[in-house]
Image (cartoon, rainbow, N blue to C red):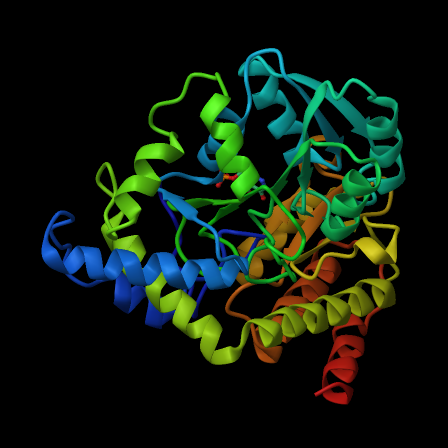
Length: 391
Ligand code: PLP
């Protein structure tokens, strides 16, 4: 592998992993400690308490040394039994992958399809649950922030639909790319298992993932019969009571997590959400000015985390991304699944400010010109005007 060195810093504007700030890198750089020694328990307890505040829960949060996919599996394996039915919404590529995993684990899935241009269809969820008089559906699984399309589903409304149907199904939510960027309230929204990961809004490298639980989810785990060992919540929660883990935790990433939580609390979680909304709005204004189409059609489902942009027929989104990487040292997200080469994704999550967003949008605009994609110049200017007018 031969890479030509480029000066300046690389702009990692994919929708996660996001750029890891220096303060977090410095924290991770501390000496690895004995994970059974006295100091570790103090760190463990402290981190577990801080992470609960990020999920906005008073209930247990389990931390796995794994990518988000592992925590997906944990959510299913701890709550369900072979042959159980789960209602899922195909909001995009990640919802599709979660469904595929459920199938491999022996779960039967009922899929509500979408055109990948909006979030979960709450009315259809309500309809399916109302029709399920015998309560065969054991869980409803929704991707909160669909990273392949930039659609954010309205989780509180999904909960309300489950309650209105008087249905006992568990609510499982993937907010792998939403946590600490898009508004998320595990307890207030009545979520039973929230799945998340470290490499997006938390500004950490990949390698940690999470399950935030509810009492009902813990109850379900007592009778769930899917095989589980590494992912078993039981030994985790027992060890976590004293700040320890049943197997070797990712010690240095936990130092980073501790610092990431501090940084988020210093800014204020609500301010973090507002910052992401503002940057997303500026980005959409740039996209519209260029004359390009935002993938998501329903404004109620716009993601504050990323914007997926469609290219006009006959233009290659992959060629555009390759030109931007080569000329301007910036990585953008590729189109996933049916959107491969049709769309690209701008990540505006994590450690961003107005200037990093402006550099990102300038890079996209210069790339559109270099790659000869038809567009109206001035999208970055439109974003700048929005940002300066909305301080
Ligand atoms: N779910 C969503 C919404 C994601 O964005 C991702 C990764 O980008 C995943 C699941 C899979 O997580 P991981 O790649 O960390 O295993």
